[in-house]
Length: 626
Image (tube, rainbow, N blue to C red; front, side, top):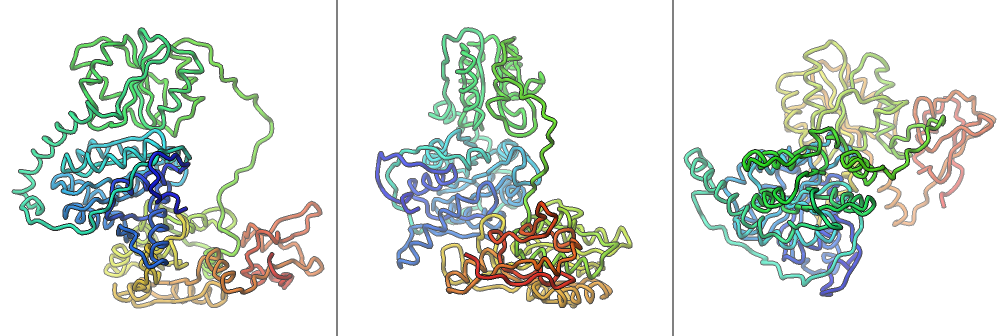
């Protein structure tokens, strides 16, 4: 792990794309790193956290300050203030995180910065772990932000390393836009020297930092001037280049990001004679370079994932220069605006455009229909017990707004306790709306990290307007789904230092919530009673279901030398009622070939929930988990 921090100039090591970004920031002399964790960006910050914790254990200074901020907006503000003070900062988030940070981002682009600041937006084509697949290149256009797009882990490292210099030259934060495929592939990178951080900055008062209307009016023209300068940098950027494949004559291909790798592979497989314009600095595009490229071609293919952003800009250049070059891409129906690409997609599109035989053979249709394999709550997850207890409290006629996190998996059978989800923190807001719009009972769910991220303002709204809802916080004392990062409800921070732990119930009480239930989901009977009391209360009520993530709890037990017991089913007592599978749904329990019900000892985490829900007391401890 600490190999990533060593100064071995010229050596090549294998890193994830996310880890490569961390290394690039270290080589640039990073001072401040902030984030709210979100896949596919999580490993960038997690790597900084590991470096900081390692240094803390050895009573050393890691050289930089790092924090898991309350949310992305706060993360951008903390790092932005550091950069305005002259330090080099990096803020990383997933694509929808930039929505949360956008209020800060849009004005930050007006005021600019002094120290370099890279904002990483990790987009998620195909929605591998997200509620949408928005294309955050629009944010570069929208906010006027210079933007870099790497194609490989090595480029990610280099763009990060050199991006700070670009940011400082332009006196502007810049976007580094990645996608899931780039974040999570491994590639070889070449190490450069790690620069010493600046450590401390100095805030210099200036009218530009206070964006009252009169200041904003003067800053907007400066932003446009900055973009003109950025275009000149783009014209000379080493990340924008033309690659000749074969003996090109008429055809050119424009591409960027991960799609470039598929274009390169397709060009080789199809033995094309083409010019490839690979754009790494994609906002602003190098217009002169692009116009010269257009004039060298008779036909151009634009291969880019998601939105036709480059395609539309090239069409504008065609119009402005009165060129008659034909553009093939999304507008001609050869590429989709949906999902991420792969070599097969690009090869198939090129084959159609160029009237070539497609070397990709279509797989034969199969009569076998594979079952869905959706992610599931872990065996022993306390959320499952909370859901089960809530359902027992009010089995029918309840709407369940949910939120972003492990607990979203409660939407799957047999629990089916997720009815509406928009974004982080939306559970309480939509709960209030449903209470206004319907006469149905409403129980909403959010995690503890989500509560601190964006669950507090809608909770205040619920209390102020006296919405008749039950707001539930599933407090498992971590940010579980993205990798067990700390949050304000934990007693340590991202650098491994002790931190003030903020109790969810104290915040709720401070927001004016009067009916508060605190329960342990491992005691399902009491948890069911707590939900019944909350449902009977007229007006807003609040349930905090407290139990640590089973993965962390078992990890801590192993550290303490405590035993973890697995459970088994007494086949003589079992009546095949299917409560443990058909109603509770623990994935460690399965039907065998003889239709008996069994527990997989490898998956069992020893929570004992199944023993509680079994109506015939047929489940009991078997022995210690190996």
